[in-house]
Length: 552
Image (cartoon, rainbow, N blue to C red; front, side, top):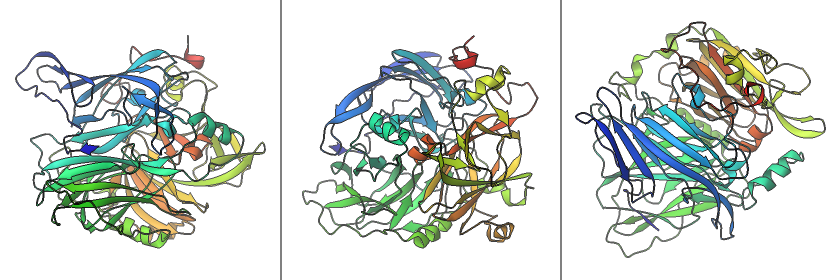
Protein backbone atom coordinates (compact mmCIF):
# COMPACT_ATOMS: atom_id res chain seq x y z
CA UNK A 1 0.00 0.00 0.00
CA UNK A 2 1.62 3.27 -1.14
CA UNK A 3 0.99 6.02 1.41
CA UNK A 4 1.82 9.36 -0.16
CA UNK A 5 2.09 12.36 2.12
CA UNK A 6 -1.49 13.21 1.10
CA UNK A 7 -2.74 9.92 2.63
CA UNK A 8 -4.44 11.86 5.42
CA UNK A 9 -6.02 14.53 3.26
CA UNK A 10 -8.21 17.16 4.86
CA UNK A 11 -10.88 19.10 3.05
CA UNK A 12 -10.89 22.46 4.77
CA UNK A 13 -12.57 25.75 3.91
CA UNK A 14 -11.71 29.11 5.42
CA UNK A 15 -14.59 30.89 7.10
CA UNK A 16 -13.26 34.43 6.72
CA UNK A 17 -15.76 35.51 4.07
CA UNK A 18 -18.36 32.77 4.20
CA UNK A 19 -21.63 32.18 5.92
CA UNK A 20 -23.53 28.94 5.92
CA UNK A 21 -22.90 25.22 5.95
CA UNK A 22 -20.92 23.21 3.45
CA UNK A 23 -20.98 19.41 3.37
CA UNK A 24 -18.11 17.78 1.54
CA UNK A 25 -17.45 14.13 0.76
CA UNK A 26 -13.82 13.17 1.30
CA UNK A 27 -12.94 10.62 -1.35
CA UNK A 28 -9.71 9.80 0.46
CA UNK A 29 -11.17 8.67 3.79
CA UNK A 30 -14.74 7.84 2.86
CA UNK A 31 -15.86 10.11 5.69
CA UNK A 32 -18.42 12.84 5.30
CA UNK A 33 -17.16 16.16 6.61
CA UNK A 34 -19.24 19.20 7.32
CA UNK A 35 -17.79 22.67 7.68
CA UNK A 36 -20.06 25.25 9.26
CA UNK A 37 -18.91 28.79 8.61
CA UNK A 38 -20.22 31.75 10.54
CA UNK A 39 -19.04 35.27 11.10
CA UNK A 40 -16.59 35.69 14.00
CA UNK A 41 -16.68 31.98 14.79
CA UNK A 42 -14.13 29.24 14.30
CA UNK A 43 -14.84 26.51 11.71
CA UNK A 44 -16.92 23.45 12.56
CA UNK A 45 -15.87 20.04 11.23
CA UNK A 46 -18.54 17.33 11.24
CA UNK A 47 -17.92 13.58 11.29
CA UNK A 48 -20.26 10.60 11.44
CA UNK A 49 -18.53 7.44 12.63
CA UNK A 50 -19.99 3.94 12.51
CA UNK A 51 -18.15 1.80 15.06
CA UNK A 52 -18.48 -1.90 14.27
CA UNK A 53 -16.68 -5.21 14.42
CA UNK A 54 -14.90 -6.43 11.33
CA UNK A 55 -12.26 -8.94 10.28
CA UNK A 56 -8.65 -8.14 9.50
CA UNK A 57 -5.34 -10.03 9.61
CA UNK A 58 -2.72 -7.56 10.90
CA UNK A 59 -0.29 -10.36 11.79
CA UNK A 60 -1.39 -12.83 9.13
CA UNK A 61 -4.18 -14.43 11.19
CA UNK A 62 -7.74 -13.26 10.65
CA UNK A 63 -9.27 -11.90 13.83
CA UNK A 64 -12.04 -9.61 15.00
CA UNK A 65 -11.10 -5.92 15.14
CA UNK A 66 -12.96 -2.66 15.75
CA UNK A 67 -13.49 -0.62 12.60
CA UNK A 68 -14.62 2.98 12.25
CA UNK A 69 -16.39 3.54 8.94
CA UNK A 70 -14.92 0.20 7.87
CA UNK A 71 -11.38 1.53 8.40
CA UNK A 72 -8.55 0.10 10.49
CA UNK A 73 -7.02 2.24 11.91
CA UNK A 74 -9.92 4.67 12.09
CA UNK A 75 -10.23 7.79 9.91
CA UNK A 76 -7.91 10.66 10.80
CA UNK A 77 -9.05 14.01 12.09
CA UNK A 78 -7.01 16.80 10.50
CA UNK A 79 -7.79 20.05 12.27
CA UNK A 80 -6.46 23.55 12.78
CA UNK A 81 -6.08 25.39 16.07
CA UNK A 82 -9.51 26.39 17.46
CA UNK A 83 -11.53 24.22 15.07
CA UNK A 84 -14.76 22.90 16.56
CA UNK A 85 -15.11 19.14 16.19
CA UNK A 86 -18.50 17.41 16.06
CA UNK A 87 -18.34 13.60 15.99
CA UNK A 88 -21.51 11.51 15.95
CA UNK A 89 -20.41 8.07 17.19
CA UNK A 90 -22.81 5.27 16.29
CA UNK A 91 -22.03 2.22 18.44
CA UNK A 92 -22.74 -0.96 16.49
CA UNK A 93 -20.82 -3.15 18.95
CA UNK A 94 -22.41 -5.52 21.45
CA UNK A 95 -20.94 -3.60 24.42
CA UNK A 96 -20.98 -0.02 25.75
CA UNK A 97 -18.35 2.16 24.12
CA UNK A 98 -16.52 5.47 24.54
CA UNK A 99 -13.77 7.28 22.65
CA UNK A 100 -11.28 9.53 24.40
CA UNK A 101 -9.36 12.26 22.59
CA UNK A 102 -5.84 11.68 23.88
CA UNK A 103 -4.04 14.97 24.45
CA UNK A 104 -6.92 17.26 23.51
CA UNK A 105 -7.27 19.43 26.60
CA UNK A 106 -11.06 19.84 26.41
CA UNK A 107 -10.82 23.33 27.86
CA UNK A 108 -13.85 23.99 30.10
CA UNK A 109 -15.49 20.83 28.76
CA UNK A 110 -14.43 17.72 30.67
CA UNK A 111 -17.92 16.52 29.67
CA UNK A 112 -16.40 15.55 26.31
CA UNK A 113 -13.34 13.70 27.62
CA UNK A 114 -14.75 10.27 26.86
CA UNK A 115 -13.70 8.31 29.96
CA UNK A 116 -15.82 6.60 32.62
CA UNK A 117 -15.15 9.39 35.12
CA UNK A 118 -16.81 11.98 32.89
CA UNK A 119 -19.18 10.17 30.54
CA UNK A 120 -21.76 7.43 30.59
CA UNK A 121 -20.78 4.95 27.87
CA UNK A 122 -22.71 4.84 24.63
CA UNK A 123 -25.00 1.78 24.83
CA UNK A 124 -24.88 -0.84 22.08
CA UNK A 125 -26.81 0.04 18.94
CA UNK A 126 -27.20 3.70 19.85
CA UNK A 127 -25.27 6.91 19.29
CA UNK A 128 -23.88 9.95 21.02
CA UNK A 129 -22.37 13.14 19.62
CA UNK A 130 -19.12 14.63 20.95
CA UNK A 131 -18.73 18.40 20.62
CA UNK A 132 -15.37 19.94 21.51
CA UNK A 133 -12.89 22.57 20.37
CA UNK A 134 -9.20 22.23 19.54
CA UNK A 135 -8.69 25.35 21.64
CA UNK A 136 -5.22 26.89 21.63
CA UNK A 137 -3.48 23.66 20.62
CA UNK A 138 -1.23 22.42 17.85
CA UNK A 139 0.48 19.08 17.49
CA UNK A 140 0.26 15.35 17.07
CA UNK A 141 -2.41 13.42 18.97
CA UNK A 142 -4.68 10.39 18.71
CA UNK A 143 -8.03 9.00 19.76
CA UNK A 144 -8.96 5.51 20.95
CA UNK A 145 -11.58 3.56 22.93
CA UNK A 146 -11.40 4.08 26.69
CA UNK A 147 -13.87 1.32 27.54
CA UNK A 148 -12.81 -2.13 28.72
CA UNK A 149 -10.01 -3.60 26.57
CA UNK A 150 -11.48 -2.37 23.28
CA UNK A 151 -8.41 -0.43 22.22
CA UNK A 152 -6.49 -3.72 22.06
CA UNK A 153 -8.43 -4.56 18.88
CA UNK A 154 -8.61 -1.18 17.15
CA UNK A 155 -10.89 1.84 17.17
CA UNK A 156 -7.89 4.17 17.31
CA UNK A 157 -6.78 6.83 14.88
CA UNK A 158 -4.77 9.99 14.32
CA UNK A 159 -5.77 13.47 15.43
CA UNK A 160 -3.47 16.18 14.09
CA UNK A 161 -3.80 19.89 14.84
CA UNK A 162 -2.07 22.27 12.44
CA UNK A 163 -1.18 25.85 13.26
CA UNK A 164 -3.22 28.78 11.99
CA UNK A 165 -1.77 30.57 8.96
CA UNK A 166 -1.09 33.70 11.03
CA UNK A 167 1.17 31.78 13.45
CA UNK A 168 4.74 31.07 12.40
CA UNK A 169 6.47 27.74 12.91
CA UNK A 170 10.16 27.36 13.84
CA UNK A 171 11.17 25.55 10.65
CA UNK A 172 10.76 26.10 6.88
CA UNK A 173 7.73 25.00 4.92
CA UNK A 174 7.69 21.25 4.31
CA UNK A 175 7.08 19.15 1.23
CA UNK A 176 4.72 16.76 2.98
CA UNK A 177 3.44 15.20 6.15
CA UNK A 178 3.27 11.50 7.08
CA UNK A 179 1.38 10.08 10.05
CA UNK A 180 2.57 6.81 11.58
CA UNK A 181 0.53 5.01 14.23
CA UNK A 182 2.95 2.47 15.71
CA UNK A 183 2.00 -0.01 18.38
CA UNK A 184 2.00 -3.53 19.73
CA UNK A 185 -0.68 -6.04 18.80
CA UNK A 186 -2.20 -9.19 20.25
CA UNK A 187 -3.75 -11.99 18.22
CA UNK A 188 -6.07 -12.72 21.13
CA UNK A 189 -9.27 -10.67 21.12
CA UNK A 190 -10.27 -8.05 23.65
CA UNK A 191 -12.65 -10.40 25.46
CA UNK A 192 -9.96 -13.06 25.83
CA UNK A 193 -7.52 -10.48 27.19
CA UNK A 194 -10.16 -9.13 29.56
CA UNK A 195 -10.99 -12.63 30.80
CA UNK A 196 -7.33 -13.29 31.50
CA UNK A 197 -6.95 -10.08 33.50
CA UNK A 198 -10.17 -10.66 35.44
CA UNK A 199 -8.95 -14.13 36.37
CA UNK A 200 -5.95 -12.56 38.11
CA UNK A 201 -3.32 -13.19 35.44
CA UNK A 202 -1.07 -10.67 33.71
CA UNK A 203 -0.88 -10.41 29.94
CA UNK A 204 1.95 -12.05 28.00
CA UNK A 205 4.24 -10.24 25.59
CA UNK A 206 2.35 -8.96 22.52
CA UNK A 207 2.52 -10.98 19.30
CA UNK A 208 3.96 -8.24 17.12
CA UNK A 209 4.14 -4.56 16.14
CA UNK A 210 2.15 -2.67 13.51
CA UNK A 211 2.61 0.57 11.58
CA UNK A 212 -0.74 2.03 10.50
CA UNK A 213 -2.38 -1.35 11.05
CA UNK A 214 0.13 -3.22 8.90
CA UNK A 215 3.01 -5.44 9.98
CA UNK A 216 5.60 -4.98 7.21
CA UNK A 217 3.96 -3.28 4.26
CA UNK A 218 3.51 0.44 5.02
CA UNK A 219 5.19 2.56 2.33
CA UNK A 220 5.85 6.30 2.43
CA UNK A 221 7.01 8.02 -0.75
CA UNK A 222 8.91 11.31 -1.08
CA UNK A 223 11.22 13.18 -3.42
CA UNK A 224 14.99 13.35 -3.10
CA UNK A 225 16.15 16.63 -1.58
CA UNK A 226 12.79 17.39 0.02
CA UNK A 227 12.01 17.56 3.75
CA UNK A 228 9.02 15.81 5.29
CA UNK A 229 7.41 15.79 8.70
CA UNK A 230 6.88 12.35 10.24
CA UNK A 231 4.25 12.35 13.00
CA UNK A 232 4.82 9.22 15.11
CA UNK A 233 2.48 8.04 17.87
CA UNK A 234 2.79 4.94 20.04
CA UNK A 235 -0.77 3.60 19.98
CA UNK A 236 0.19 0.35 21.72
CA UNK A 237 -1.22 -0.89 25.00
CA UNK A 238 1.96 -2.11 26.68
CA UNK A 239 5.25 -1.72 24.79
CA UNK A 240 7.73 1.11 24.55
CA UNK A 241 9.27 1.33 21.08
CA UNK A 242 12.44 2.63 19.49
CA UNK A 243 11.89 4.29 16.11
CA UNK A 244 14.52 4.87 13.40
CA UNK A 245 14.87 5.33 9.63
CA UNK A 246 17.70 3.62 7.79
CA UNK A 247 20.34 6.08 6.61
CA UNK A 248 18.44 9.19 7.74
CA UNK A 249 18.71 11.51 10.71
CA UNK A 250 15.57 12.77 12.43
CA UNK A 251 15.27 16.35 13.72
CA UNK A 252 12.83 16.46 16.61
CA UNK A 253 10.54 19.50 16.30
CA UNK A 254 7.40 18.75 18.32
CA UNK A 255 6.41 16.67 21.33
CA UNK A 256 2.68 16.40 22.10
CA UNK A 257 1.87 19.98 21.21
CA UNK A 258 5.15 21.63 22.28
CA UNK A 259 7.87 22.78 19.92
CA UNK A 260 11.10 21.18 21.10
CA UNK A 261 14.74 22.09 20.73
CA UNK A 262 15.71 20.81 17.30
CA UNK A 263 18.16 18.09 18.21
CA UNK A 264 19.22 15.40 15.70
CA UNK A 265 18.58 11.74 16.58
CA UNK A 266 19.50 8.44 14.94
CA UNK A 267 16.67 6.77 16.88
CA UNK A 268 14.01 7.82 19.37
CA UNK A 269 12.30 6.03 22.25
CA UNK A 270 8.53 6.55 22.23
CA UNK A 271 6.54 5.12 25.12
CA UNK A 272 2.85 4.07 25.21
CA UNK A 273 0.60 7.06 24.62
CA UNK A 274 3.39 9.39 23.49
CA UNK A 275 3.67 11.34 20.23
CA UNK A 276 6.52 13.15 18.48
CA UNK A 277 7.05 14.92 15.18
CA UNK A 278 10.39 14.80 13.38
CA UNK A 279 11.75 16.33 10.18
CA UNK A 280 13.50 14.02 7.72
CA UNK A 281 15.36 15.32 4.66
CA UNK A 282 15.75 12.81 1.82
CA UNK A 283 19.47 13.13 1.04
CA UNK A 284 20.29 9.52 0.21
CA UNK A 285 20.59 7.61 -3.04
CA UNK A 286 17.33 7.13 -4.93
CA UNK A 287 16.14 3.78 -3.55
CA UNK A 288 14.17 2.33 -0.68
CA UNK A 289 15.07 2.57 3.02
CA UNK A 290 13.72 0.65 5.99
CA UNK A 291 11.63 2.37 8.62
CA UNK A 292 12.09 0.32 11.81
CA UNK A 293 10.22 0.10 15.10
CA UNK A 294 11.31 -2.34 17.79
CA UNK A 295 10.23 -2.92 21.36
CA UNK A 296 12.26 -1.68 24.30
CA UNK A 297 12.87 -3.49 27.59
CA UNK A 298 11.38 -6.79 26.34
CA UNK A 299 12.69 -10.31 25.79
CA UNK A 300 12.43 -11.22 22.99
CA UNK A 301 12.53 -7.96 21.03
CA UNK A 302 9.65 -7.47 18.60
CA UNK A 303 10.35 -5.63 15.34
CA UNK A 304 8.32 -4.30 12.45
CA UNK A 305 9.31 -2.37 9.36
CA UNK A 306 7.93 0.00 6.78
CA UNK A 307 9.55 1.52 3.71
CA UNK A 308 10.63 5.06 2.90
CA UNK A 309 10.68 5.04 -0.90
CA UNK A 310 12.31 7.73 -2.98
CA UNK A 311 10.09 8.75 -5.87
CA UNK A 312 11.27 7.21 -9.15
CA UNK A 313 13.12 4.37 -7.46
CA UNK A 314 12.86 0.74 -8.44
CA UNK A 315 15.57 -0.37 -5.98
CA UNK A 316 14.16 -2.02 -2.86
CA UNK A 317 15.42 -1.40 0.65
CA UNK A 318 18.31 -3.65 1.62
CA UNK A 319 19.48 -5.29 4.83
CA UNK A 320 20.87 -5.01 7.43
CA UNK A 321 18.29 -3.10 9.46
CA UNK A 322 19.65 -0.19 11.48
CA UNK A 323 20.49 -1.34 14.99
CA UNK A 324 18.52 0.06 17.88
CA UNK A 325 18.91 -0.10 21.67
CA UNK A 326 17.41 -3.08 23.48
CA UNK A 327 17.24 -2.83 27.27
CA UNK A 328 19.68 0.04 28.05
CA UNK A 329 17.53 1.89 30.61
CA UNK A 330 20.22 4.46 31.36
CA UNK A 331 20.59 5.22 27.62
CA UNK A 332 16.86 5.90 27.38
CA UNK A 333 16.85 8.13 30.47
CA UNK A 334 19.78 10.14 29.11
CA UNK A 335 17.97 10.62 25.81
CA UNK A 336 14.81 11.70 27.63
CA UNK A 337 16.74 14.50 29.36
CA UNK A 338 17.80 15.89 25.96
CA UNK A 339 14.17 16.49 24.93
CA UNK A 340 13.64 20.09 25.96
CA UNK A 341 11.34 23.01 25.22
CA UNK A 342 12.11 25.53 22.47
CA UNK A 343 11.72 28.70 24.54
CA UNK A 344 11.73 31.14 21.62
CA UNK A 345 9.19 29.36 19.40
CA UNK A 346 5.50 30.03 19.68
CA UNK A 347 2.95 27.25 19.68
CA UNK A 348 -0.77 27.86 19.11
CA UNK A 349 -0.46 31.50 20.17
CA UNK A 350 2.05 34.13 19.01
CA UNK A 351 3.73 34.50 22.42
CA UNK A 352 6.91 32.42 22.92
CA UNK A 353 6.61 29.16 24.82
CA UNK A 354 9.31 30.40 27.21
CA UNK A 355 7.19 33.33 28.39
CA UNK A 356 5.66 31.05 31.03
CA UNK A 357 8.42 30.79 33.64
CA UNK A 358 7.24 27.63 35.37
CA UNK A 359 10.45 27.29 37.39
CA UNK A 360 9.74 30.46 39.39
CA UNK A 361 6.15 29.61 40.40
CA UNK A 362 5.46 28.54 43.98
CA UNK A 363 4.37 24.91 44.32
CA UNK A 364 1.23 24.74 46.46
CA UNK A 365 0.97 20.96 46.76
CA UNK A 366 3.10 17.89 46.08
CA UNK A 367 1.63 14.52 45.15
CA UNK A 368 3.99 11.55 45.31
CA UNK A 369 2.18 8.72 43.56
CA UNK A 370 3.63 5.27 44.14
CA UNK A 371 2.40 2.59 41.77
CA UNK A 372 2.60 -1.01 42.90
CA UNK A 373 1.45 -4.49 42.05
CA UNK A 374 -0.79 -6.07 44.69
CA UNK A 375 -2.99 -9.05 45.44
CA UNK A 376 -6.50 -8.06 46.52
CA UNK A 377 -8.96 -10.83 47.27
CA UNK A 378 -6.40 -13.23 45.86
CA UNK A 379 -6.25 -11.56 42.43
CA UNK A 380 -3.77 -9.35 40.65
CA UNK A 381 -4.43 -5.62 40.94
CA UNK A 382 -2.42 -2.41 40.60
CA UNK A 383 -2.54 0.43 43.10
CA UNK A 384 -1.70 4.10 43.42
CA UNK A 385 -0.82 5.01 47.01
CA UNK A 386 -2.54 1.86 48.16
CA UNK A 387 -5.83 2.28 46.25
CA UNK A 388 -6.76 0.17 43.23
CA UNK A 389 -9.25 2.28 41.29
CA UNK A 390 -12.69 0.87 40.44
CA UNK A 391 -15.08 2.77 38.16
CA UNK A 392 -18.39 3.49 39.92
CA UNK A 393 -21.62 3.02 37.95
CA UNK A 394 -22.17 6.79 38.08
CA UNK A 395 -19.55 8.97 36.35
CA UNK A 396 -17.71 11.17 38.82
CA UNK A 397 -18.49 14.30 36.83
CA UNK A 398 -22.23 13.65 36.91
CA UNK A 399 -22.14 12.87 40.62
CA UNK A 400 -20.23 16.09 41.23
CA UNK A 401 -22.51 18.24 39.09
CA UNK A 402 -25.74 16.92 40.60
CA UNK A 403 -24.34 16.57 44.16
CA UNK A 404 -25.14 12.87 44.22
CA UNK A 405 -23.87 11.32 47.46
CA UNK A 406 -22.21 7.94 47.83
CA UNK A 407 -20.23 7.93 44.58
CA UNK A 408 -16.85 9.31 45.66
CA UNK A 409 -15.14 11.11 48.53
CA UNK A 410 -12.61 13.86 47.89
CA UNK A 411 -9.04 13.28 49.07
CA UNK A 412 -9.67 9.70 50.15
CA UNK A 413 -6.26 9.02 48.62
CA UNK A 414 -3.18 10.32 50.40
CA UNK A 415 -0.69 12.77 48.86
CA UNK A 416 2.20 10.45 49.74
CA UNK A 417 2.65 6.66 49.78
CA UNK A 418 1.31 4.98 52.90
CA UNK A 419 1.69 1.61 54.58
CA UNK A 420 -2.05 0.97 54.38
CA UNK A 421 -3.08 -2.44 53.08
CA UNK A 422 -4.01 -2.29 49.39
CA UNK A 423 -7.74 -1.87 48.80
CA UNK A 424 -10.21 -1.27 46.00
CA UNK A 425 -11.73 2.20 45.87
CA UNK A 426 -12.70 5.36 43.97
CA UNK A 427 -9.77 7.71 44.48
CA UNK A 428 -10.17 11.43 43.76
CA UNK A 429 -7.80 14.28 44.60
CA UNK A 430 -9.50 17.58 45.37
CA UNK A 431 -7.58 20.51 43.87
CA UNK A 432 -8.30 24.19 43.33
CA UNK A 433 -8.49 25.85 39.92
CA UNK A 434 -5.13 27.53 39.12
CA UNK A 435 -3.19 25.47 41.66
CA UNK A 436 0.41 24.92 40.61
CA UNK A 437 1.39 21.46 41.80
CA UNK A 438 4.21 18.96 41.68
CA UNK A 439 3.51 15.32 40.82
CA UNK A 440 6.15 12.66 41.40
CA UNK A 441 5.55 9.25 39.82
CA UNK A 442 7.40 6.72 41.95
CA UNK A 443 7.78 3.20 40.63
CA UNK A 444 9.04 0.20 42.56
CA UNK A 445 8.13 -2.15 39.72
CA UNK A 446 10.73 -3.80 37.45
CA UNK A 447 8.89 -2.69 34.30
CA UNK A 448 8.65 0.69 32.58
CA UNK A 449 5.56 2.80 33.29
CA UNK A 450 3.77 5.43 31.22
CA UNK A 451 1.45 8.01 32.80
CA UNK A 452 -1.05 10.32 31.09
CA UNK A 453 -3.02 13.30 32.40
CA UNK A 454 -6.22 14.46 30.73
CA UNK A 455 -7.07 18.16 30.62
CA UNK A 456 -3.56 19.63 30.94
CA UNK A 457 0.03 19.32 29.87
CA UNK A 458 2.79 19.16 32.47
CA UNK A 459 6.43 20.22 32.48
CA UNK A 460 8.76 17.23 32.82
CA UNK A 461 11.43 18.43 35.22
CA UNK A 462 13.27 15.32 36.35
CA UNK A 463 14.04 11.64 35.95
CA UNK A 464 16.00 9.60 38.46
CA UNK A 465 16.77 6.10 39.68
CA UNK A 466 15.71 4.74 43.04
CA UNK A 467 13.48 6.58 45.50
CA UNK A 468 12.56 10.24 45.13
CA UNK A 469 13.36 12.56 48.06
CA UNK A 470 13.12 16.31 48.50
CA UNK A 471 16.84 16.47 47.69
CA UNK A 472 15.94 15.21 44.21
CA UNK A 473 14.54 18.68 43.49
CA UNK A 474 18.12 19.96 43.21
CA UNK A 475 18.37 18.06 39.92
CA UNK A 476 15.18 19.51 38.41
CA UNK A 477 15.23 21.28 35.05
CA UNK A 478 13.45 24.53 35.96
CA UNK A 479 14.19 26.32 32.69
CA UNK A 480 13.20 24.34 29.58
CA UNK A 481 11.55 21.05 30.57
CA UNK A 482 9.32 19.79 27.77
CA UNK A 483 5.58 20.29 28.22
CA UNK A 484 3.68 17.13 27.34
CA UNK A 485 0.72 15.02 28.49
CA UNK A 486 2.30 11.54 28.76
CA UNK A 487 5.55 10.68 30.52
CA UNK A 488 7.52 7.50 31.14
CA UNK A 489 8.80 6.24 34.49
CA UNK A 490 11.75 3.88 34.31
CA UNK A 491 11.96 0.63 36.31
CA UNK A 492 12.52 1.25 40.03
CA UNK A 493 12.80 4.97 39.32
CA UNK A 494 10.92 8.27 39.58
CA UNK A 495 9.76 11.01 37.24
CA UNK A 496 8.74 14.51 38.41
CA UNK A 497 6.43 16.95 36.63
CA UNK A 498 5.01 20.40 37.37
CA UNK A 499 1.53 21.35 36.23
CA UNK A 500 -0.62 24.45 36.33
CA UNK A 501 -4.21 23.31 36.85
CA UNK A 502 -5.93 25.97 34.75
CA UNK A 503 -8.70 23.77 33.36
CA UNK A 504 -11.71 23.21 35.58
CA UNK A 505 -13.18 19.73 35.51
CA UNK A 506 -12.75 16.08 36.47
CA UNK A 507 -9.55 14.75 34.94
CA UNK A 508 -8.26 11.21 34.63
CA UNK A 509 -4.64 10.51 35.60
CA UNK A 510 -3.91 7.00 34.33
CA UNK A 511 -1.42 4.42 33.30
CA UNK A 512 -1.07 4.01 29.55
CA UNK A 513 -0.12 0.38 30.12
CA UNK A 514 -3.69 -0.60 29.44
CA UNK A 515 -3.80 -3.82 31.43
CA UNK A 516 -2.47 -1.92 34.47
CA UNK A 517 -5.13 0.76 34.05
CA UNK A 518 -7.80 -1.93 33.66
CA UNK A 519 -6.65 -3.41 36.97
CA UNK A 520 -6.71 -0.17 38.92
CA UNK A 521 -3.65 1.97 38.10
CA UNK A 522 -5.43 5.29 37.73
CA UNK A 523 -6.99 8.09 39.75
CA UNK A 524 -8.81 11.40 39.16
CA UNK A 525 -8.04 15.05 39.80
CA UNK A 526 -11.06 17.24 40.58
CA UNK A 527 -10.01 20.76 39.61
CA UNK A 528 -12.57 23.12 41.06
CA UNK A 529 -13.59 26.52 42.36
CA UNK A 530 -16.96 27.73 43.59
CA UNK A 531 -17.43 30.31 40.86
CA UNK A 532 -20.30 29.49 38.52
CA UNK A 533 -19.12 30.91 35.22
CA UNK A 534 -19.12 29.83 31.59
CA UNK A 535 -15.64 31.34 31.38
CA UNK A 536 -14.31 28.52 33.55
CA UNK A 537 -16.65 25.62 32.75
CA UNK A 538 -19.56 24.98 30.42
CA UNK A 539 -22.87 23.65 31.65
CA UNK A 540 -23.72 20.00 31.25
CA UNK A 541 -24.41 19.32 27.57
CA UNK A 542 -28.11 18.96 26.67
CA UNK A 543 -27.37 15.56 25.10
CA UNK A 544 -25.39 14.19 28.06
CA UNK A 545 -26.15 10.53 28.70
CA UNK A 546 -27.36 9.61 32.18
CA UNK A 547 -26.57 6.37 33.98
CA UNK A 548 -26.16 4.95 37.47
CA UNK A 549 -27.48 7.26 40.18
CA UNK A 550 -27.73 10.10 37.66
CA UNK A 551 -30.26 8.23 35.56
CA UNK A 552 -33.22 10.19 36.95
